[in-house]
Structure formats: structure tokens, C-alpha cells
Image 1: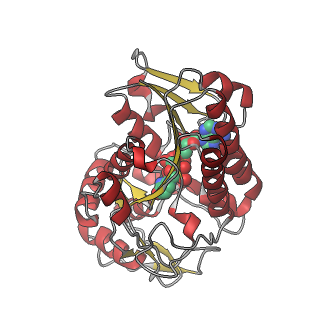
Image 2: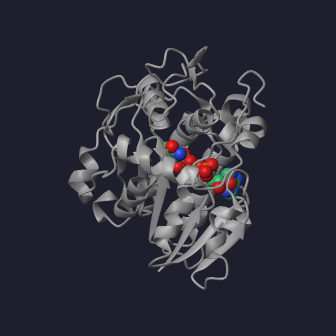
Length: 330
Ligand SMILES: NC(=O)c1ccc[n+]([C@@H]2O[C@H](COP(=O)([O-])OP(=O)(O)OC[C@H]3O[C@@H](n4cnc5c(N)ncnc54)[C@H](O)[C@@H]3O)[C@@H](O)[C@H]2O)c1
């Protein structure tokens, strides 16, 4: 079996590639804008992994690269924080890029097309838990562009009969997650700050919640969904199904690192920040028996152990990488 993973050098993509490469020939397509060569370096020279540096905005390349591919996993993305100050590139990559890939995948008659969407398509919870039928009212251009990608994917199923599906992960964390600049995510940022005796920066009052899902669960959910025939033309949430506030998250991390005496630094709310995310996980369980195995406490323990074993120069990362200004986008 031959599979294509767009965004395969990114955080979730590279973890997915590691799993898929155990059984398939994997082509990684990534322009390395936020993805890192080191995330896939251990596959270099292997006969069953091909790494292609290229862009999903290049239609000719997509036509070429999807030839003889059985399954497409589409994860390439420009992230949420980039969208705040550069909405256009979010649209070009996340929306138009997905349409480009649908066109190429259909032309190449791929057997399955798996679009990895985002819980940001829902906006904030109007009811909880949020099932797949929850209204989709994204608060950011990122969420809107991911929703456009969902709709192109499903339209290709409805109009052309492409065997396509939409998988919606909620906030995912784990090894290789970004800690740096605009791409940095809350868990690695809090860990890095705690290790440097700096306070966690909380935007708003910290009561906003997320459904944090460990990356091995997210990857397993994506793979199980892709193998499920009933998923064709369907959308499914992949999440732990556990709601954690940002304030509670900071407490858990600072406590684990013995830094509970450091109080949070409160900043004004971020533009478009979702207030509540709590996933309904029943559909994944019914259709393909998926249940996320790793709870937040266990997941934080594993992640902190991984992060602290990387030999990062923590002082340098704090000084050079993690400062991101919302007003300027720099
Ligand atoms: N991380 C999360 O918490 C989370 C939650 C829900 C959904 N998702 C979705 O999962 C997918 C992967 O997210 P991630 O967190 O691993 O992000 P990431 O930024 O680590 O990975 C995205 C990858 O896409 C690549 N890329 C960007 N633009 C490209 C282009 N034009 N052509 C080719 N490659 C390009 C980047 O270099 C990067 O390797 C995304 O589709 C995202 O919407 C992520």
C-alpha cells in the first residue's frame, strides 16, 4: 500500500508517518514552513519512506505525487496564530490547497482521501459535549479555512463519488509539538516557562477549556477512521472527551515541575479565542471502536519526561523562540 501524508514533517503528521511506515510505503509532502527535517530524519534512506519538499499550492506537483497512491492523509496547514495577522496565506494553503489536493486525488483515482480538520471549525461550544452535528461557527479565519477544506472534501464525495472523509481532532499534544513563536502551543510553552522559572502566560481569565488529546491517540484515531468503510462521506471527532481549563492546565504543569509557587501572568484575551471545547466522542466509538487511552495527567507526565530528555538549551529557547506579539504578529 502507498500512502501520501501532506504536512508529514509537522507535529501530528510526523507521528502519523512513524505509525504508517510500519506497514506502508509513505510519501511525505511538506514545504517545511513549520515542519522540521529532524521530525522525519530517522526515515531518510529507508526504502519505504519518500520525503518530498514541495507545496500543496503546486497543482502540477500534486498531480504527479498522487499517481499510484492508495490513501491520502491531508494534514498540511498554516496555523491559527498565523491566521490572525496573515489571513490570506491561511486561505491559500488551508482552503485552496485542499481543493487542489481534492482535484489531484480525484484525477489519480485514489482509493481513500482523509482530510484532517480541526475542532476550531466548531467555534466555541454552544452545547456540550460537542458532537459532530454541533453547529460550525468558526471564530477565526483559520477555523473558517479548515471548514472550507471540510466542505471541499465532502463535496468531492457527493459530486464525484470520491471515497473521502473528515476527521476532526481536538487540541493534540505530545512529542514534537511546537514550542516556538507563532506555532508554539500552550502545553510546551507552559513546560518551557516553568523550567525557566517564568510564570505561565494566561490570556483572559483562564476559564477557557480545551479537550487535550495525546498525539498517539490522535494518530490511532486517524488511522482507524481511514480504515473504516462506514466513514466514507462522514465526519468524526477524535478526542479524549475530557475538558480541562487553561488555568487548571497551568496548575498541573507547574505542580509537576515543583513550581506551583509561581503565579500566572494574566494578559488580555486573544482575538477569536474559543471559550469552551469539550468533544462528543460517541461516533468514533460506535463506528470503529475508538477510545482515547491517555488522560491529561498521564499524558502530561509522559510529555514532560520527553521534553526534558531532549537536551534543549532552555534559556536560549526562552530568549529567542517563544516570544510572540499578538499585536504585530511577530
Ligand atoms: N495540533 C493540534 O492541536 C491540532 C488540533 C486539531 C487539528 N489539527 C490539524 O492537524 C493537522 C496537523 O497539525 P499540526 O499541529 O501537526 O501542525 P504543524 O504546523 O506541525 O504541521 C503542518 C505541516 O504542514 C506543512 N505545510 C504548511 N504549509 C504547507 C504547504 N503549503 N505545502 C506543504 N506543506 C505545508 C508545515 O511545514 C508542517 O510540517 C492540521 O491540518 C491541523 O489543522 C491540529
